[in-house]
Length: 197
Image (cartoon, rainbow, N blue to C red; front, side):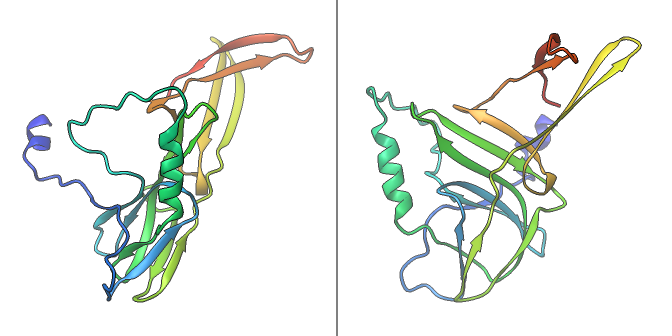
């Protein structure tokens, strides 16, 4: 497996993270329904394109140590308020994943990351036209407790748009999903932390 990954046969998707060059033509433009994040698209030829509205990650970059407060958040908001269009070749694309980011009051970065290889929705990109990519950042949590011979079995499903598989991250790490099961009187009869997978 490692040999295959190092072989270069598996290419990462092309990433578009800048607005189109001034005066360029022949493409359609897409804008997101969110401020910061990524949409992963698959075209009719099954090529995957990653369209980003976030700063590109540089290889071997060390994190900058910021002073108290979060001045970089303000810079990011100003940048996002600028030109948020991205150029795509005309065609029909299927949204197969997304990541929507937000920051809390302390500046900690939270994001939801969802994938659905069958596709969440289709978008048509027309040359010279602007298309808005609508992504619903809502998180749906479905939980059930079943009593079995061996004890209590907890089933939890966390989904995003169109029931896509979704994970919640804070500062780049998956958050622990805690649970409590209450009896009819409101007493806790089981509690713990869910495992992903």
